[in-house]
Amino acid sequence: MPQPSASLDSFDLAILAILQRDSTTPQRLIGEAVNLSAPAVQRRIKRMEQTGVIAGNVAIVEPAAVGQPITIFVEVELESERTELIDTAKRQFSAEPQVQQCYYVTGESDFILIITVADMGAYEALTRRLFFGSNNVRKFRTFVAMDRVKVGLTVPLPG
Image (cartoon, rainbow, N blue to C red):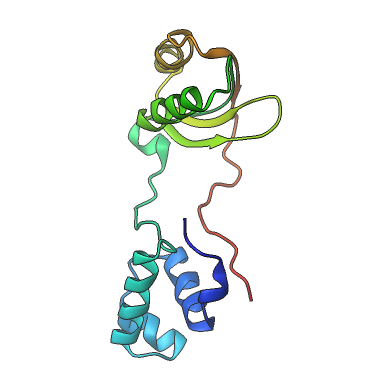
């Protein structure tokens, strides 16, 4: 797990702000924007990648454009909260391509999943594999998104 932002200075935060808007921004342009040379920007980005501050560089794909128009939120409650069973659930949920995000949470539910699927038939098949096929899932609740109002991965930065 990366360390808190104490090791990040104002240059790092400015670089991160640019990369969160567009990770394909050339390092020369980032350097001009933050008042550093391109090699200095490159070193800082590499350090932030190595320390886990930058977890990855991806293209954000519109699900509907690739035939996955339905977003579903699922609360999952396990039968048992034994460590090995929680770890098994984490691995199973993480292994499913339709599970976009998975959170182990406090409260009545044990997990919150964000899932994208092509249609409800695909979701039913997923529920059979993940929930009905598991002896450790006590119950699950499904919420189907009617509209994508805001979706983002940018993290608010200090300063």
